[in-house]
Image 1 (cartoon, rainbow, N blue to C red):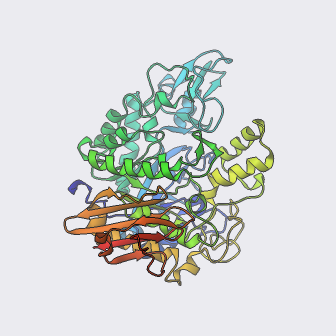
Image 2: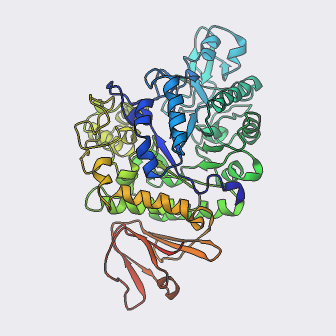
Image 3: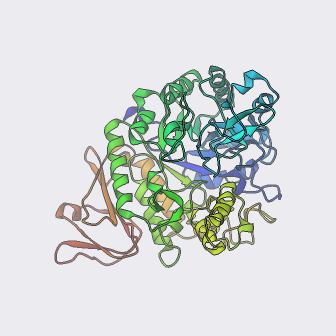
Length: 553
């Protein structure tokens, strides 16, 4: 495990700058706002701040449509503000992780504009195909809805966009493109950046021959594409970031590929995000079709990925939430009587696993979904597109809003709740996106900082445990039999040290076997203080959403 020593005991905190803290009163979060909150982040104990894109952008996809990778968008501040953030973060032992969107650029990027102007060099930077205006090169679908191809009449060509029509896919098969991207990484390396997150990086290698997909939306042809491992090795090596902390967002990936992406011997990435565990409430695999969480499948996925990544030498990025996912306490916990307990259980469940934990802003205080009553309150391009699609497919407005309330990316993007004031301490003026309709002063940093039993206090304990306990950072993991798929239990072992983690995923009391050896371990952490609940049969009664950690550190 020596290769992992630089990050196995670290915790990453994700910041969506637009919604974190507005320092200048324009309703829009900025880099100075992050500087303001560095003391809080140091107090929390995190090691890296992953910032979603703040680069120059028309903001059609909230910054994931980059127009200039080496410039700070004026909405967020200046390059001097960023340099100040890097410097002050370093003083507190906190590094920055930049979010590199290398699958596509904005159509406003100078490369694409020169392609539109007819320059062949820059047309080769993208994936253009000749064709008739009434017949796209393939039937692939954009992940935001509609065709993945857009026709340019002046060129009599189509360009590929797996995401929004304003996000044109780059042609990674062109060595000049790969060189441009290496130069961008070198630029930020010179600025003092030592960690990178690569957006949908496993989609960048497209097949040479593109064909229609009559089984899906096309993703099976380009996910984990033909040259992906070759290109990643080259990017990391040539940009000189082999020793940096790097994480790849892997869309519709496989376990086998993630082992390769994150195995030290492959020299590609430090770790991977995969999303399989966040699709267990998708009906028939459709994000926009609701169903209750399949806890059996959830448990099976954690067991499989944790066990096999360990066996193959890979490394997981551990997470529930990010800027694209609904709030986990709303999704798999409970927003009412068990709000605090379920938020703590969900945190303990992944923070004590094998991998590097990621906290998304507001997760550490148990922020809830947006619950907007009107489509006018939504801003997310994907949500607005799918609202129309849902209506076209026969859903009523009420049904479509219920689906958005559960699935919209805006659930994660509501302003950070710093205090109980009108705009939650995020801004002095109306924010760019409304606060959650479930906003209450109890769910704020100010309120929870003073409460030793708060969700925030619990997160601080988990972070400290990882830093101070090699068994959590480096120990082997194996899963325990609980006789019910609604309780996930595992043990971490390193030498003589061992911890046992028990998590009741459900809102009902669960009965699990408790053998004599387990009973002998001291209690390290819990989210429910109750009486001894051992039955005469040697079973232990776990309360709804209870978590319990036993062992020796």
